[in-house]
Amino acid sequence: MTKLIIVAILTMFLTGCYTIKTVKPGTIISENKTIEVPATGFSILEIKAALLQDGWKIKVINENVQRVRLDSNNPKIDTKNNYDTGYRLSINESVRNNQWVIGISISVVDNKTNDEVLNMYCDSKGFGGCFPEDVAMEIVKELKTIENRKD
Image 1 (cartoon, rainbow, N blue to C red):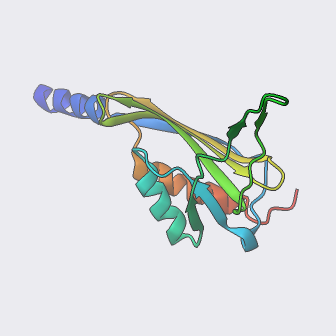
Image 2 (image 1 turned 120 degrees about the vertical axis):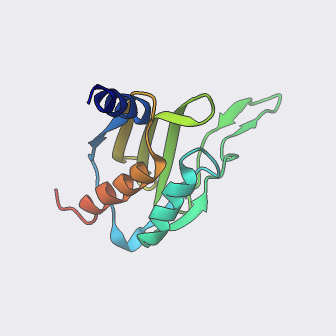
């Protein structure tokens, strides 16, 4: 019996658990379900798959939208971003030993208004980390709750 309890506790400790927190200050317009996402990342494949399954059209974020323009008379930074999607997703992941995602921060921004419509954070508890598949499904679920929402 003692061995069974130790195995159960050890399994919970090693697989870990996590919490997901969300803030939903905006609205998704269902007629414009196009989103820019980063090309790569530990969780991106699962996020892209979940968004596609929910009917989103995906484009890879144009990393070169911010250009430095220098000339001798007028040095300045051109920071005007031109997006051709309705929304953009930013993600920051904390990884342990290049294999366990222990924290995922996600922000979805409306490209027309530059307002954030969804902010989500997955916080790992234990060694197991956040599971990208679960986070991806949670993103889709939360985006559906704010689709065509009337404030």
